[in-house]
Every structure is written in C-alpha cells, then in structure tokens.
Image (tube, rainbow, N blue to C red; front, side, top):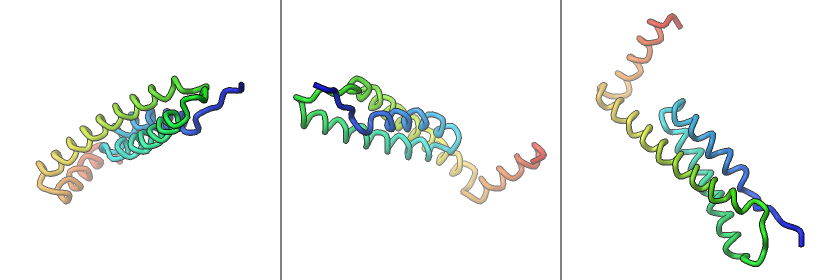
Length: 110
C-alpha cells in the first residue's frame, strides 16, 4: 500500500520556523500571525490523521514537530507583543513611540 502525505505538515513547519524570525522583526505581531496559521494547519492535519487511523501517512512524524514549533512560536510572539505594548504605553502612547523611533533613526543617520 502506497503511503500518503498529510497535506499541510510541510507548510505548517515552514510557517512555524518563520514565526521565530517574525517575533523579532515585527514586534510580535508577525510571530503570532504566522504561528497561529501554522498551528491551525497542523491541527487540521491532526484531525485528518485521527479520522483515518487505518491510513499510513509518510509525514505523520513531522506533524508533532510542526505543532510544537507553532506553539513555541505563538508563545514567543505573544510575549514579544506584550512587551511591545507595555513599552509603547510606558512612553506615553503611540505618538511618543513614533517620535522616539524618529529620533533613533536620525541618530543613526537614516
């Protein structure tokens, strides 16, 4: 019997890995977004796997890995987002935050 592949495991693994990078680059919003999509796709494949226990899937081992990576990315993204929100609030709002960013870019010569 030919082994099938779960359709979303690879993309959820890739999105989970991208979410780690996005946590650092986008104040956590990208990390939450990418890892949320990755977790949704991994859970969709998990339901497919549980609905068809007789089928043998070639990439079933990667499913657990992609779910773990997506969960870790979601946690890191949420922490990064919370830290960014607290930082913006501590500066006095979004206007003060944007002013601080402008000053920083001017000091860097950008």
